Amino acid sequence: MKVFVSGCFDLLHSGHMTFLKEAAKLGDLYVSIGSDKTIRELKKRDPIYTQDERKFMLENLGCVKEVFIGSGSGILDFTPELEKVKPDIFFVNSDGDSEEKRNYIKGKGIQYIVMERVPEMGLPVRSTTDLRKIIAKDEDSEYSPLRVDFAGGWLDTPGMHRTNGFVVNCSISPLVSKKNWRYSQRSGLGGSSAWAFINALNPFKYDMEHGNGWQDSAIVLETGCCVWHSGDKPVLDFKNTGDFLKGKMAIWDTNIPHDTQSLSQKERDIEKIKEISRIARIGVLNKDVHILSLAANLTYQEQLKEGMQEVPFLNEDGVLGAKYCGSGHGGYVLYTFETEQQRTKIISKHKGFIPIEPYCRLFGQNHR
Image (tube, rainbow, N blue to C red):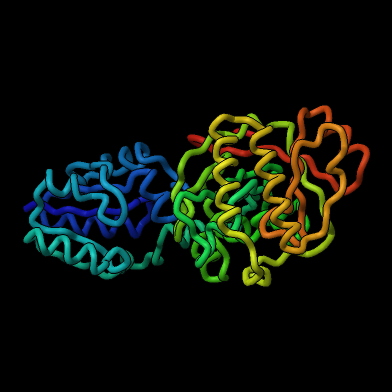
């Protein structure tokens, strides 16, 4: 008999061991693990261990015959591997059971067995989510970037999606942690998503439940300088590290609280915002701070039409662009500069400025 299981198997724990041991009692055990890409799509976070590490650990368990990295996508990412193995049994725990999975497996004529999550005698119940919460609670080891946005704000919000529109943003350092939050609260920098991430919650789910758009959670999890398709969920068009912005960004605190939810019903020209987002996309594509600053300035003009107050320092030497962060009417204002020297000059001249840098997490390494 061939038995097939699938899952992320991140932060391997005793619950996984019990599950795999029970599955192996039924026959030769084949395991398909979620790829790093699939975990990011489904969990809205990076895996703790890479797909190759997770494959290596499972291959070295005596109860496992063979391990695959799922080459499909979504909740049925294992289907190419299932077709290869042609198992007799598909074994799943109660947490992984779903109608979509059940219907697919039964449609293939494969026996579908669900195991309730029961720990080994005397051991506590374990899950990867719970372990992430314990780590976040006991250690100040989780850090998160915030974000600045250049154009396309609101195009991530229900009712304001536009075909061929984009959301253009960049994650930033200094990073924040539970013990060290370097920025003002309610600042327009995506702080609620960062807070959810640091506390081992799902930032995307958290923002959706609180009536926010998805751009904050998307950039906090993806990092880098990103272009996203407008729509009901984050779909990445392309990204780069944002290195072309190094030394060329700062934020200025208006000392006025920012509140996205109270602003969502204001009238705004969504079609104009869409056209500006297309300019910002070109700026990222060409790594051109001047084009990106043009998009920021055009967005700022739309913000003024919405009733926001004019911001200072626009005519200072070296300032290329400026706009309110997020939905505006308070919080921080983003400024872009021609050179790092000109940024330094303005920061030293005026209070309330914070220099920021693009932040990108790639293959386990931080680029700041």
